[in-house]
Amino acid sequence: MPMTLDILLFLVAAAFLAGYVDAVAGGGGLITIPALLIAGVPPLTALGTNKVQSLFGSGSATLAYAAKGHMRLKEQAPVALLSFAGACLGALGARILPTTILQTGLPFLLIAVALFFALKPGLSDVDAERRVSPAVFAVALVPLIGAYDGLFGPGTGSFFMLAFVALAGYGVLKATAHTKLLNFASNLGGFAVFALSGAVIWKVGLAMGLAQFVGARLGAMTAMRFGARFIRPLLVVVCLALAIKLLWQ
Image (cartoon, rainbow, N blue to C red; front, top):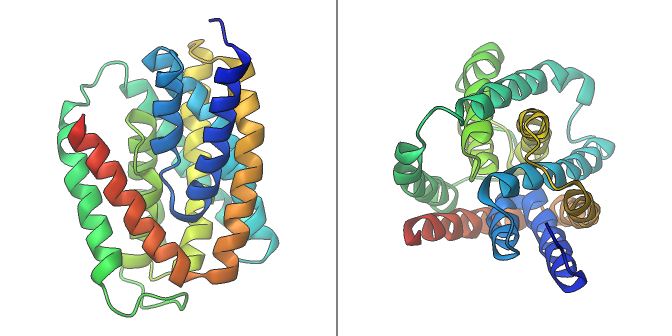
């Protein structure tokens, strides 16, 4: 499709902002997918192109958090693989499964996530009591959320955050770091399916990806500096904004 310089610059700016927000609280697709649609990209191609550029953002944030010791990549690799596999299945299912139920129920789930992080006392960067075993968390929850990312997508980071904080007992900053790794893996799974189907505009995706990389690095640095007192309110705002957008649609 034809892409003028002003439209490309608009998409690059949107990707930079999305990378920053997504590295802290998730929800970057709330910015980039509407931007791609406004630019005239067809819906299926917008989803595929979004997966390309989001890989740069989630990958950048993952490396930034890992470099500061907030996660160990080798230890988390098997869990990330489960997220990848779930996303592949979800993306394949997107071709045959209706997403009407997800579209209807998702705003209310996001509002519930926002209320949890807004109202639950004692949320901080300190780990709390684990409510499920690591095996149950990895085998049951991670592929399920990964499949959701491949099938539909919006709010994936918020759901990973909720799972890590409420069930795995992670502190907010640690949960954010691990969320980005699993989100990177699910993005990679969805990307693989979309790329094989040809639903990607590579030049646009790569240009946006570079901006995402820089924005995500800055976002991760901000989150690591200020911790829960910055991540928590931004997560609430992102969840509510995504819920309002979906309800409006």
